[in-house]
Structure formats: C-alpha cells, structure tokens
Image 1 (cartoon, rainbow, N blue to C red):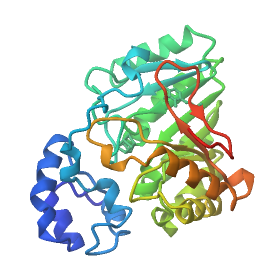
Image 2: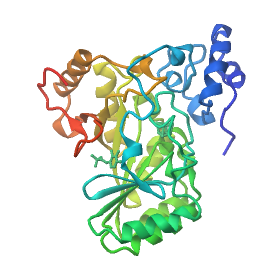
Image 3: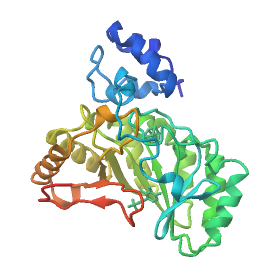
Image 4: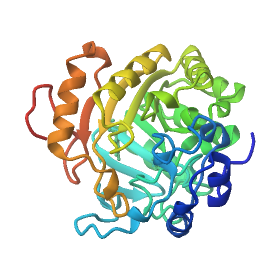
Length: 324
Ligand SMILES: *Cc1c(COP(=O)(O)O)cnc(C)c1O
Ligand code: SF4
C-alpha cells in the first residue's frame, strides 16, 4: 500500500490546489493532522477546493472560527466509558475503542478531541476489555470501533475476534469502519477469512458520505465483504458543502445498494469544536430528508439521526417531520 499523504504541500501539489490556502491548511493541520490515502486523493478533481471528497479532509482556517456552543465531547462519550476502552451507552451493545488510528483524518470527526491514549483497548487492555464483556451477559453485540478497527493488523483483529467468539452471549460482532471506502485494498484475504471464520454474526457498518467515494475498487471491496458473510450497512454524516443536496443523498443510496450495502443512518454532525463550518441548519436538514424520501424506495432511505448525550438511543426522525 502506498503511504498516505500527511503533508499539506504534498496534497496541494498533487491536486494542483491554489496556493492561497496553504498557510491556513498548515495551521489547522498542526491541531489535527492531515491524513489522506493516495487512492482516495486520486478520486478528487484536480484544482477544485470544493471537491466533495477533498472538503472532508482539507484543513481550513474555518476550524479556528469561534463557535461558543461547540464542545470537545458533544456526545457524552467520556461519561459512558467504563474502562479499558469500552463504552457502554445503549442496552445490549458495547462499543470497544480498539485503536486511535484511522486510515483517513476527517475534519468533521467527532472524536478529534477524544483521549485515545487513555481510552483504548490496545495491548494489555484487550484482555481486560474482553473480561468486562464476558462478565455482562446483557451484551449481545460488540462494536469494534476506534479510530478505525481496520487500522489493526489481521493478527490483532484475530485475537479480538477469537476472544469475542468465545463469549457465548455475544451474538454479533460489528465493525465500524471507513477504511473500505478510503483505502479498499485493506480488504484483503486475511480480513475476508476473519469475517468468514466467525462464530458470531458479523455486521460491517461502513462510512461513505458521497457517491463519488464509491469507486469500482471500493464497490469490489464491499461486495467481497458481503460475499464473505458480513451484513453491510452505511452511515454517513450530513455535511455542508459535501452531501447537503437531495440529488447527492439519492445517488449515494443507489451506489451503496449496487455495492451490497443498505443505508442506515445519516448523522447530523455533532457540535464538536472545530467543525462548525460543516453544520447544516435544521430546516434544511428536514427539507433534504423529505426530498430524498420522496424519491427513494423505503429500504434505501437512511434514518436521519442525532446523538443526544444521556438518552437511551440515538434520536431519529420520521419522514414528514417538520422539525428535528
Ligand atoms: C452509536 C453507538 C452505538 C450503536 O447504536 P445503534 O443505534 O445500534 O447503531 C453503540 N454504542 C455507542 C457508544 C454508540 O455511540
Ligand atoms: S474515519 Fe471515522 S473516526 Fe476516523 S477521522 Fe474519519 S470520522 Fe473520525
């Protein structure tokens, strides 16, 4: 796999972007580093700072804009951390922070301020996290998250998968990953064997935001995950300037279906500092949801969702809603 682009100048040169943005990009990247897989950058239009893929990864001066009601932990993750990288927020499901690393750094990421050094199930924490899951038979589903669990080697994933398979009350293992979208060659034979070899059912929730992300190589990777036995869903984030058009949402659903993936959630962005320029206002989000629903079969219409700290489930909205 070629090295990802982690340097602002390399990205600007590769995409022939106007020099005017370089200094601001360098400043923003000093706070939250730039990281773009080469194969993802190759899907972007040259010279276009408004490209919807580029916009998700390009550091901007806007990240420093004052936004008083934007906070570091907007979704209450710190309150639901039970230790050893395990977050237990919702009934029956526990989420394991397996690593802090991601294949890509998305500028809107709600975990950009998360303390991964303190809270993850790497190394010696893995065994302790498995023991916590084994001790709580209400946990029917374990979500491997991060960061991105596919940043782990197949060997490390194997240790976690075997450990979870040995806990009989764990019925489903769910991977939350953006890697197949931004770096499809990570979906290798070892990973497909990992999926095919599980006792527990395997669910893979990928994260694509725009139909142009689903290149032919991404489609092949997704289809191979499904063929290996995973049930595939997609979650996306509603992002101003990326996918806040009904046409884009509709096209994304069609592309996902062609790749064997059912649209699951469209998340309204969490109010995390440094990300206010991605917010879509509420009335526009409602209008988009209803416009997309009017054009899609029900099974290709994702649920619009927002996470509200302290509630029993993510909050979702029905078609025809007039406010969120
Ligand atoms: C989103 C989330 C889940 C999964 O919720 P679903 O509605 O089942 O997709 C589980 N645990 C945590 C901590 C979450 O943030
Ligand atoms: S892949 Fe997910 S966790 Fe990683 S930076 Fe992007 S949004 Fe955040």
